[in-house]
Image 1 (cartoon, rainbow, N blue to C red):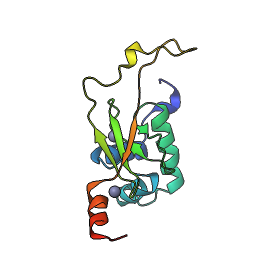
Image 2: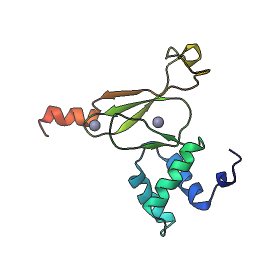
Image 3: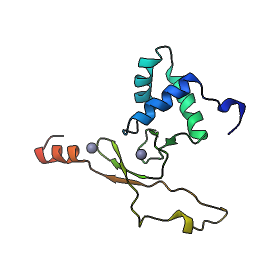
Length: 136
Ligand SMILES: [Zn+2]
Ligand SMILES: [Zn+2]
């Protein structure tokens, strides 16, 4: 960091604050809807640019998901996700003590490995309940 453009603008601060408030791993569109209440003049493009910046500077995480849509996480501590294949909601899983230890990983052409992000797929309770009712 320390690059001149790494300063936190008001827009960035608001986006970061709103993202850190929620556990829903929102999309840029969803975040835009919330941020616009505080910054009515902000554009979706600006939200995207600021999200990219925050990801590059390690302030937030962009979820690498098998689901096509990009989601963002204000929680940068190591944890895993489970994604519902029906509705796309993403829930945090606390990392169990016996989880994959990245410290022991040896990867060719990499001097060090310091993070792993896993995504599990499944069906959430509400989608499973709909199944039981026979509702599509
Ligand atoms: Zn679901
Ligand atoms: Zn998360």
